[in-house]
Structure formats: C-alpha cells, structure tokens
Image 1: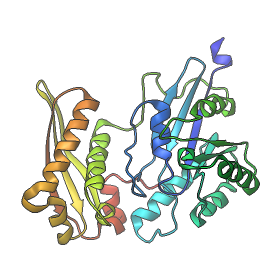
Image 2: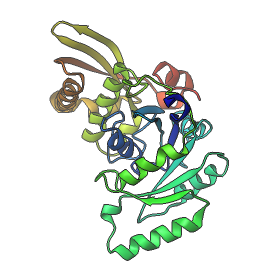
Image 3: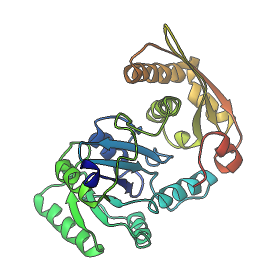
Length: 299
C-alpha cells in the first residue's frame, strides 16, 4: 500500500540573513509563500511551504536569518524562531553564498551542532561565481567545515541545480502519511500574506533603516461580490518615520499601495480595494507585548 512507502516531514531552511532562503522555497514550490527583497531580515516569521507529490510531502520551513545584532525584542524573537525550527526538522538545509563566508555563517554552523537532523549544505548564488575554479574551491572548503550529508551548489534565483536537491530531499524524510492536505500550499492565512505583501512593497520603496522600524497589521479583510476590501495599518516607531513612509503629498504611500494592490489582485484572483494608514507606536519592535499583538509568535 502507498501508506507503507509514503514519506512526509519537515525541512528547515536556515542561514544568515539575505542568503536566499525565501527565494529557494518560492522557486521549489513555484508559488510565492514568502516575500523577497534585497534587504537583510526581510523574513520575520516561520512560514511553512507544503510540497506534495504522489509519493512524498516535504514541508519546507522558511525561517528568519540568524543574526548577531539581536538587540531589540523583535530580533531576539526572530533568532529564537529560526533556532527552534531546527528542533522539529527531519532535514536541515544550511544555506550560504558560494563566494562568501562570514562570521554569521560560522555562528549558524555552530548552532547546527546541536541539531540531531542531517544537514545538507547549499552554496547559493553560483550564477555570480566566476571562474569555475572559484566554485570548486568553495565546495571543497565547505566540505571541510562540517559533517554534511551533501554539499550542493545552487542558484535559487536562476533555478540552477535545484532538481538535484528536490530529488534528494524525500530520501531524508520518514515514512509517514501526508501531514497536510494535498491542496494546501502554506500554513499562513490570506490576511498574513496581504500584510507581508504590503511590507515587501514598503521595503522596496524605502531606503536606509526605515523598513526595519515598521510592520503592517490588517484591520479589515472582507470578501464581497465586487472583490476584496482590505484596510491596513503601517506601524512605525517614530513621528519622523511616518513622514518618510507617507512621502511628499502622499506619493510614497500611493506608490506602495498601488504596487501591493496589483500583486494582491494577481495572487487572489479578484479585484482588491486597499486602504492604508500610517500610525506611530513608540518602540514597538522592542516591546514583547506589542510584538505579540502585532502577530509575532513567541517560540
């Protein structure tokens, strides 16, 4: 019977910020479950992406980047979320950049020493590595850094060598019936994805440190015959940030709202009416009670 051979389990994708974890999962699934920007610490939550096949189900766990400068409560919470994902993992994918090794990469590697799950090392962004000898050296160096089940060079953005990874993943999963329905792509709600889409467009539109001082909260999400109505609040930490997010004559907020509305319309398949407000909540990112009210989880 298929139940005797079916495999299902959790695959934690971990690494320092901005190595391509969300891009990898989105590419494998062919579905955007996590927002992506060029800025570090874009992913703030644990997000599951479910990849179901006739003989296995891999549940990819997208995690915040593990980082050193965890001074605020939000950053500490993000680190705990990423580290706790290791406890439930049947397989760990440790992502680094093929042409760069940092102290934060070393920190993550040391954390993996406490995990009982097998670890596959992924050297991402191989499309940026030239000549080939540089990549071969990087693979050899990574092989010496730890006891990895495999070391695989990939490009998550260009979808290079991911077929090798996808074939390897189910061999590490335990025999088990599917843990989630076959038609389920992620554990996150439409409200969550709406908030994240707005935050992605804000992060892309704003410069410097502003994106790290804001979050988005959905106050109203209603399906009607004419489409979906969404009211969202953008929380910032200081009055000076509010002016930057709104922009001169409201130009930044209008630009962000339009970009978010168009993407949400494409994702949800119906017209979207989106209204945005910007409000100030002093130092919300360093207040655990505020973080819980704004949707952050305590692992």
